[in-house]
Length: 179
Image (cartoon, rainbow, N blue to C red; front, side):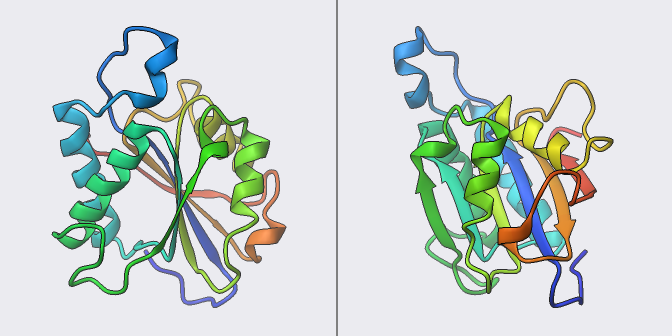
């Protein structure tokens, strides 16, 4: 699934994996993954590795469930902790408070800051913003329900990160660990 064109950039959008229910809005950012969420995150990482979509850069919301999702994805990609493993060098990981409860234009702004040398980036965030970002890139690609928990949406665009824009990055693959 990798692209030989050196100008093409691949953005993988990932809605965080299934989290435990919180008691109130005050503790929403601290909700941990459920057992199913932990397994789904590892399965998402294995799917990324199998399809040659190992990220150079990871942008991750600072919420506990997204950080735990990244850890599970990294374990699934490498078979080891996210500090690195047999599949290659570790990605640059940016924990971004602005990715929590973000609107799609705010997430797009984060994408536009990815290192120009990076070919593949992974953005781990929340609904509705992450689903709306996918729809912004490809209005025909995401169904009305948006991305499910631990669902991956792969978008490709033949321009640098700073030039990503509306309707400019077609959805080329989708995967949900539970499928």
